[in-house]
Amino acid sequence: MMRFIGMSTEQSLTKARTKESLIRLQEMGHIEICEDIAMENMVNDLKPANNYFMKPTGKDEEWGFAKVFYKDIQKIIAMKSDYKSKVFATYINVIGNMFYDSTGTDKNVPISFIRIDTIVKNTGINRKSVVEYLKALVEEEILYFIHFHINNSITKNYCTRWIHKEHTSKWAIRLAEYHYRTDQGKFKGGAVGVSDERGVS
Image (cartoon, rainbow, N blue to C red; front, side, top):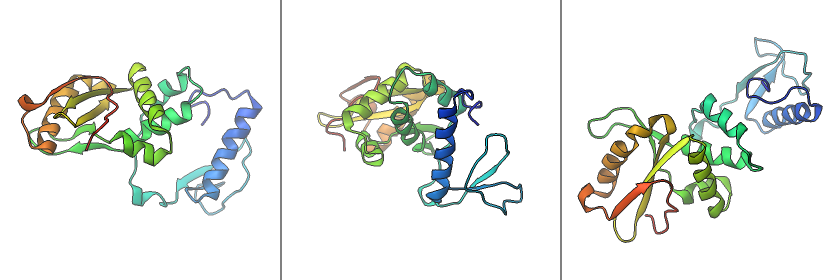
């Protein structure tokens, strides 16, 4: 598992922390760790040389799920930041709300319009830091943002994964027109990048 996400398997401290994290997830009821493929014999201790089988318990299903992407995780791991876990928490909130919208002519559009204040509430990270982490995700070419000044009091972010950046504007315009019941020509402006969304509704 550590090798898969690009972590060093030589450091005993890193191995111990990974093991502790998995055990903690089991104690909190998020996963079950078993020593057999039939998932009948749960274990409470992990040995690095052994194979284990894990499955989610379903505890989190009421909150939905997020499809995370290996290339994105690799980029977050490679970031020069002391706050990678908070950057990842911010990322997962955006990705977990990347709706596949079916309004209008485009189908299956992976775009997120989660509010910054919602990310703050979900993560417990202060607002200034959330904005900073979103901008870092853009700088690392993981997420792509555009924002619109809908009127004199509302500014709204729309986000896709970086790989969809050539479509972001088209998808976001259609959604903004739909959400705010107004034509793009009446928007007060907009730009590429993360807005702090002050005054958004």
